[in-house]
Every structure is written in C-alpha cells, then in structure tokens.
Length: 172
Image (cartoon, rainbow, N blue to C red):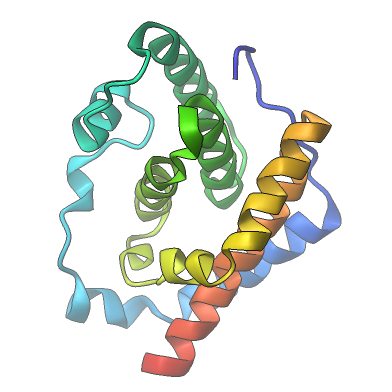
C-alpha cells in the first residue's frame, strides 16, 4: 500500500452490489444460530496482532508491518461500507505478499466480512472464488496495472453476491 489511503473509486456498480448483498444477507439471519462453528470473534479485522496470529506471517516482516499497519489504520477509521472495505483489504494484502499468496488475503477478507455480519461465516465466498480463479487473477492484474483497485472491488462484490445466491439456493 505504502500510502495513507488505497486508490479506488466508488461507482454505481459498487453501490448497487453493496445494496443487493445487504438485502440478501438480511434474509439469512436465522441460519447463523443453527450453523455457526468458527470462533471468528477472536479476531479483530483491523489489528495487526490478530492478523499475524492468524496467518503466522514470516515474509519480509519489517516492510509488511508498516504496510499492514497503514492499511488497518485506514480500514478502522474509514466510514465506507464494510463490504467495500473487505474487498480493499483483500486486494491490498494480496499486494503485500510475495509469490501471489492470496489465500491470506482471502482469509482476512473473511474476517472483515464476519466482523461486519456474522452470517458471512456461512457464505461460501472462497468456493466461488476458486470456481473463478482466472477472472480473480485477471481482476488483480488489471487493478495493479491501473494502480487502482476499483476493478478488483467490483469483481469481489460480484463474487460475494454469487456466494450469497449459491447459499440461498442450497439452504434457504
């Protein structure tokens, strides 16, 4: 990240997907009590210590600490909707890691989303991303080329929406 604020633009597509995700999540509230298994509440999504504990980070720690602290400070103070923040955190963490270790970024997006709404414990976002890996990496690459994560945010919001739809078709 290396700056005070990540670069992206909130456009109509992003706003519409956030509204759609929020509507669909409100319909699933009863499922959480029945199916909750993971203790996500142990992790503060904007705390470096929680992050390091979760991922056992070993790569270039000095540089990463500064970047992660900057990112988490921005995310903790940002008034943006947490769905958008989760996508930004995902993208920025993916950018911090060498060798494309995006699993850590996806994990931490899940922590941010769970902190936003406990129902995200049940939503299979990772499996939807896995089914669309080529598009996932393409969205990351386009965002890197543009030095702006808007394309990635739009892509991830679409993946979240698809995951909610998948869950709803299967269980609701």
